[in-house]
Length: 411
Image 1 (cartoon, rainbow, N blue to C red):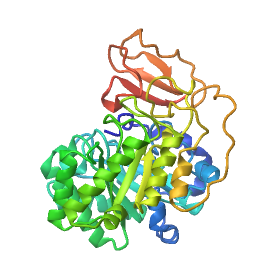
Image 2 (image 1 turned 90 degrees about the horizontal axis):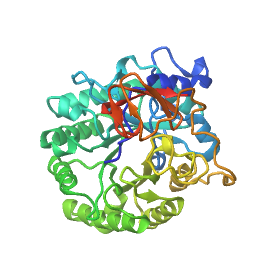
Image 3 (image 1 turned 60 degrees about the vertical axis):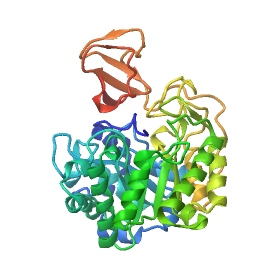
Image 4 (image 1 turned 180 degrees about the horizontal axis):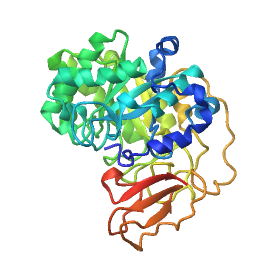
């Protein structure tokens, strides 16, 4: 539901985006040092407020610049998947093995050097999840333990979406793995994120809650994503959160306050995949609801999108900008507020940016009416894209790595 713009193979883009961090920020193995990790653990409130950031795709912004501009300290790095070619080992986006990673390790080290930290999100929309690829909960947990150990993590997010959450065995593997990781890593902050509906969540979301109950697993937080399902502004989102509170109470036997303490909101800033719009005022309304009800998590998809498009509303959903008028990193400040900090004030933009994030492209702009064949290159939203086969009227950046357009990075 959440990740139509999410998946790709842009490890090179991460290297470009974080080239200014300096060699000292990137360790030889791509692993954040144990000493640095141990000293950078944050309060759970920060992990509960961490927005999603794709560190290797969708024109990744400089995380340390966001920290300077907003006061943000925690990031939800996405996504860990099974290898595209098969197997039960963790990768970034299905293409870059965690075991040999240096790019994401460098990002984490830079964040920690400024007093921040990260959670890592597993799953998302599309791709093969480890719960699908691994044979049982134990082997799934062993794969995720590699990620925790590699990056010395204090927090992890299970983002259970299509098609995995429709697979009973895969959900059982993921919930079982989450329980094992919680037991084997004392103090680990564990969140579980799934689809939201007007009823709180749908049949598959309820199945996941039932699985957690049957396994005796209680994470720090169950979050829903109230968008891409006929939502219209904050009122529809808070109504869904109220309904989800009822589901948590019914499923686990909690009282209202306990259910809210285990409940979270995971929104989408700006224009959603289905054309809904969520503005800054909507985020403020949901934030007020979350804090007044004692909710346990407030996050959004994504920091890659937390900047203005050119034009501000281009009538499409982009992975690299929000499609609403805004200052850069404006939505991140709502997460900072949820964590209990005060973000610095930033004056609103007086003029829209002169070009989409990423710079100036030297190839022609994509147009919906043109016909493209394999090998044709176009510019769109600050990235260069190459067609894999014949296409027309398929917008680059909206169909993930299985679509016709291959992302060749920012230009």
